[in-house]
Structure formats: structure tokens, C-alpha cells
Amino acid sequence: MIFHTGPTKPALMLLCCMGTWLAICSLPFGAPTAKIGTILEFLKGDLEELYKNYSKCQAAGMETDESLQLPCFTPGCEASANISTIKAYLEEVERLNENNISTAHIRKRLDDIRCSDPPKPSVSGPEDFYERKIFTLTVFKRLSDCMAKLGAKNNTSG
Ligand SMILES: *[C@@H]1O[C@H](CO)[C@@H](O)[C@H](O)[C@H]1NC(C)=O
Ligand SMILES: *[C@@H]1O[C@H](CO)[C@@H](O)[C@H](O)[C@H]1NC(C)=O
Ligand SMILES: *[C@@H]1O[C@H](CO)[C@@H](O)[C@H](O)[C@H]1NC(C)=O
Ligand SMILES: *[C@@H]1O[C@H](CO)[C@@H](O)[C@H](O)[C@H]1NC(C)=O
Image 1 (cartoon, rainbow, N blue to C red):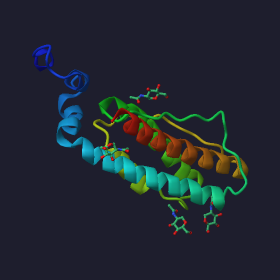
Image 2 (tube, rainbow, N blue to C red):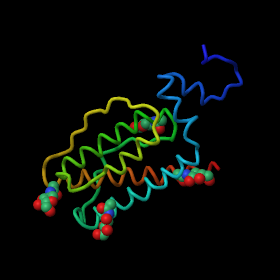
Image 3 (tube, helix red, strand yellow):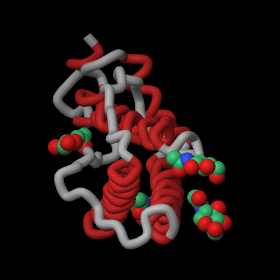
């Protein structure tokens, strides 16, 4: 099979071909790394802005919830599951904020950097007015930190 064409094939190919061939492989071979880098830059800016606005306005003076941890990811096909989880959190944030906050642009960008579309886990945040704000603030903070970490990783490895 194509997965075993020889020891010299890059590891990426192996990783990439363990799932659905077409869906999974369209990304690493179709989107150049530079393009993914650009999308990550935009994501970083968008999430920082959301976090800053939210922490200054709606959640002024509130602290993030240390017990709430979100997955981060290393760009690549293996990230798809974590990206689905992140999207589920963003959708829950929108629901809890009665659509006063839009994360559609962020979810769209996340779609652009993943290879497959694994089922989203179900995420439910607190309905309480105050708790809901802490949840939203924490989700934005975690994702903003995640993007910053990706940038840092990129710089030290390159
Ligand atoms: C953040 O707040 C500024 C100023 O109020 C506004 O122009 C901008 O659209 C807001 N950004 C987001 C992502 O809500
Ligand atoms: C997905 O998130 C988990 C933590 O929730 C992390 O351990 C794992 O490395 C992440 N996977 C990728 C591919 O980044
Ligand atoms: C959404 O915005 C409306 C109008 O500004 C406001 O009355 C409502 O309280 C907001 N909902 C949330 C959850 O912030
Ligand atoms: C990673 O490095 C590449 C090349 O220097 C750059 O184009 C890209 O924007 C960087 N990505 C991030 C997330 O910093």
C-alpha cells in the first residue's frame, strides 16, 4: 500500500496517511507551511483582541478559572481532534453570551488549518451570570496563550 512505499518517505506522510487518505492528506500537501503560519498569526491577533476586550469590558476585574484547561495543538494533521474541541468551546462561548460575541471568523480560520473534521465533543459551560463570564474569559485566555506558545515554538525551532 501507499503507506509503505519505503523507509525514505517522510514521517509526515506516515502520520498523515493513517486516517482518511483524501481528507487528511489534502492539507499538508496542499497548504504550504507559510500559509499555515500566516493563518496562525491572524488567529493569534484575533484571540488576543477578544481576550483583551472581554477582560477590559464584560469581565473587568475577574480572574480566569485555573481548573479550566483547554487543549492546545501543534500544527499538523494530528491537531484536528484538538481543533474540534477548541471549536466546541468557542461555540459554547457564543451560546452563553447569547451571540453578543462572534467567533465565526476564528472558527473559520481553524477550519483552514486542519485536515479532517472529527466529531466535536460536547462542551457545556456554566449558565450562571458571573460563572459564565469567567468561563468565557478563561477560554479566550487559554486560546490566546496557546497561539502565543505556537509562535514561540516556531521561533526557537527555526
Ligand atoms: C474590541 O474593542 C474595540 C473597541 O471597542 C472594537 O473596535 C473591536 O471591534 C473589538 N474587537 C472584538 C474582537 O470584539
Ligand atoms: C492535544 O491536546 C492534548 C492536551 O489536551 C495534548 O497532550 C496533545 O499533545 C495535543 N495534540 C496535538 C496534536 O497537539
Ligand atoms: C447581549 O446583548 C444585549 C444587548 O446589548 C444585552 O441586553 C444582553 O444582556 C447581552 N447578553 C449577554 C449574555 O451578555
Ligand atoms: C513560523 O515561521 C515562519 C517562517 O519564519 C513564519 O512565516 C510563520 O509566520 C511563523 N508562524 C508563527 C505562528 O509564528
